[in-house]
Structures are given as C-alpha cells and as structure tokens.
Image (tube, rainbow, N blue to C red):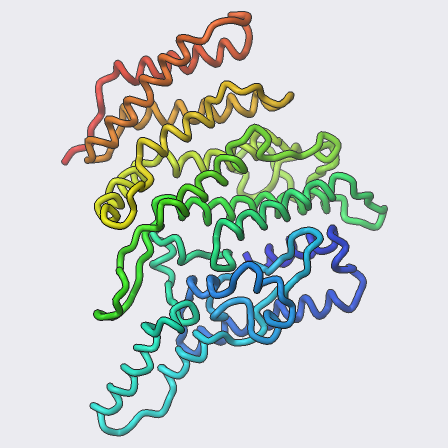
Length: 439
C-alpha cells in the first residue's frame, strides 16, 4: 500500500507541475519515503504496535504548512499507516512524509524503556504516572491510541488507515479533488515514444484505488462509535457515538461523490488510451493474476458503488444505528436513524431528475444492485431486530409502488425492461417465504 501511495503521489505531483521527474527533488522525495517506512518498522522492532489514531493530530490547515510538517511531523506517531500528504491543486504543500518522531512515539518509548526505581511499588507508580498523561486534556490528540483491533472491527470512526488530519470528511474532499484533477490532467497528457505505454492506465488505476480507500474512511463515519481505552476516572465516555451532524456530512459526501451518475468522469478520449501491460493481461478466470485487455468504465464505477451501497444497506450498520440511539438520547436530539438513512439512499439512487447524457446505463447498474440487496434482506434477513426487517420491507413496498406508477416510453425499450425486471424481483421477494437461520 505504501509503494502504491508513492506511485500515486509521483503521478499527482508531476501532473500538478510540482515535481519534475528528472530533478533532484525526486531523490529527496523517495529518500523521505524510505525514512518514513524505516522508522515505522524500527518502531515495531522496539515493541511498538500500530497507532491508527495518531494521524488525527493535525488540522487540515497545519498539514499545508511545509516548515511545521517537516520539523514536527504530519502525524503524532510513525506507527500509523498515514497517506502521503498531498496538496490540493494550486495550494501550498506540506511535507509529504513523516520524517520525524511524533509525541506518541516518545511517550511509548519512555514507558517501555525508561529506567525505573528498584522498588516495585515506586516502579509501578512511575509507569502509572507516564500512562496517565493520556488523560491530560492538553495531550489528548497527541497521545491518542487505536490499534489493529480498533481498526479492523469497523466501529471506530477515528482509528483508520490512510487518513490524515482531524477532519476525515475534509481529508476525503481533498483526496477526491486530487484524484479528479489527476484524471483530467492525464486525459490531455501527451506521451513520448520513451514513455511506458501503460503509464496512463496505471495512473488511473492508482487514482481509482485511492477513491476506494477514501470511501472506507467516509463509510466508517456513518454509525461510527468512538472507542476509547481510557483508565477509569478519565471523565470521557468509553463508547461514544459520533455526533449525528458528522455522520450526515460523511453520508452526504458519499452520496454525491460515489453514487452520483458521474462518480467517475473519465473522458472517452482517455478511455481509448488506457492500454494494458500485454505481458500481464489475462482474459477470463478470476482476474487475480492479470488484468483484462479492455478497461470498462461501467465495471469500475459499479465496483466503487457496490462497496458503498453494500455497507449503507447492511444489517450490521442498521443495528448499530439503533444501538447508537440508546447511547445518544440525552445529548443528540436528532440522531441518524435507520429510516432516515434508507430514505435518503433510495431518494438518491431512484431520483427522477434527468441524467447526464451517457450515464443512464451506469445508473441502472446501481439500481439493479440496490434492488438485489433489498430483495435479499427481505428473503434472507439474519437480523434479530424487528425494526430493521420492518424498515427494509417498507422500503421495498414503497419502491415497488413507485416503479409500478411510472408510465410512458416504449415498453420494449431498455429502461422499461429494467423497470419491469426490478418490479418482478421486488414482487417475488415480498411474496416469498422468509428463509430464517436456525437458532
């Protein structure tokens, strides 16, 4: 992942005109990358675990300060998986890599290696004093900790990989703007006979994968529960649902940037230039050992959209939103609810607004995926929550009524065939016997 980030960054900075590929700046850039990676791995040899919350240390504005980030770092620890700190097009750039130790690193090493008194009681007290610094309000961000389990379980909106800065939504907006700018610049780029013929396809692929990683950061905010490892008496909640305003902000960006008809706006002229590596291509099979010859914009878009829609429509997320209401009744008067989430999602996916020319098929792909997931949740629901099942069934009934009420157009046309297919799927699901898992 770090190597891929490096390649993406080199493409972005070259496209922005910030980094000349033949200049000494490239050497300094790569050496900084190697130092960042090496410090991380040396940290492991000294006993430090990953700290995926450390990348929240800086504000978005601080990350654009070249002197601050160079001398003090982008993150509170080298033990995070931080993305390369890339600038918005036309803006000043902070240091791309973490080339100095952060406050968390010094703190953790002090706890592990500081000489202690011979007396066991005094030694225990000395270690406790070091550990309790994490409860100091002035040190909260610098010493915050979240590791592999916190990231992998999918609850915590702050213990993330490849995020940077206090505001994950602001970071996501920046990355999406960077990737879209890269796509546009590569569409007009002129290659020379000495350039690698696969350069454009590789660059676009890096951008797509960065969009996918960014979507995971945003998805984690929806229904997110901040999980803190504080000792008793810190005064902070240990399981703290993210404020609903932040959840809605992330949801809005997901819907507008990933589920919009033009989520991937790649010009046809660019698509015709995305040649594969002919020594690495593979047709058929599972696709894991090679790449297809053709580059399908529809398939790439659907892959991105499926991942987003799958999470938003999942029963696990619905159950967590229900649980969050129990935790937020006293402090959040308008929590994000399952009903609001599904109403908003359906309004976007099945909007009756005119579509931009050429995006109709892409929108039908997304709608087909929506119907498949909705039907499956009705027939094969595994949720034990009555409200989850009731809301999903209600959405299916509402959509079915909406589709049946639509008239006009050639009944033999593709849009009509698509609509009838969705009607048949929903009707069958609503009439089917429910398959329940054994207790």
